[in-house]
Image 1 (cartoon, rainbow, N blue to C red):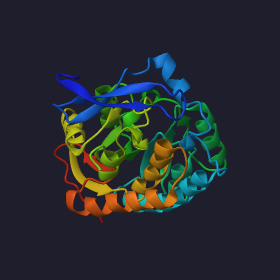
Image 2: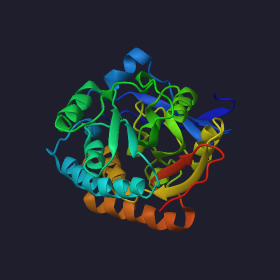
Image 3: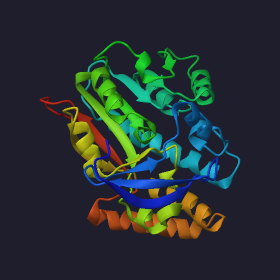
Image 4: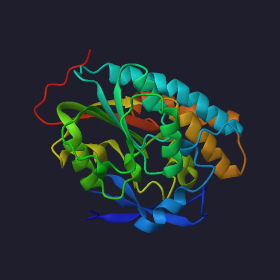
Amino acid sequence: MIPKKSHYLTVKDYTVSNKEFDLLYNETLDMLITFPQPKADELAGYYESDDYISHTDSKKSGTDKLYQIVKKIALISKLKLINSFKTVDKNLLDVGCGTGDFLLTCKNNGWKVTGVEPNSKARKSAENKLREESVSEIYSEIYQLKNESQFDVITLWHVLEHVPNLDGYISSLKKLLKPNGILIVAVPNFKSYDANYYKQFWAAYDVPRHLWHFSKKSIRGLFAKQEMSVVKILPMIFDSFYVSLLSENYKIGKSNFLKAFYIGLASNIKAIGTKEYSSLIYVIKKPNINFKTI
């Protein structure tokens, strides 16, 4: 997996352990690899924190409240994106569905939804939200889904960076996708301005929960191995502001809204030319299928 590697940066886990991890650069794929990566039986422990916001609906702190506001705006944008695809059955799989807000939004807008969420606390929250809805079961692992070619759209919103076996996971996603289906993958971009500015304090490194750190070249290369193509790349504009806010806290030990806003804005402005936004959405398809949107 790592034919050529060199040390890129040393980063601390600010959420749970305060341990340091190295980021190794894979020259072939143009991506970073967290080293050492936790063993399978250790990984769950790195998610056991009240500060891991995507597994809760917390609104306790100012940062929590900002996250929830941005999440509501993002839900509208995500729904608009999947509605733009020409699908027949509107079967959606959301991998890493967290507390279920995206599933609920899609269900309320005519989609037949299924979720995957490994974290038991977040999965329980999602199940409670969807209890009154005709939702398929929310699974703990993608490998529990046995039927192939069943989904029109599969979404992974900041999930791919968490999965241990990249090639095997991408292969499973491909099997679950209908021949004319669309795969949507959103991940942080370590080539963004805010990543380069904050360096070891950049919150989107989020070691060791983030095992991989992608560039556009690496995403294209990983999916090309499975004969899948990136057909469109879209920015996630709000990510630079939220990530910068967390990064300021890691860097100086407290929130600095004005500085975070400035860096987030600067990152988006610079990305107008470079196209290297803080986070990117990749629209991916199987081979030899005409890609059409409405």
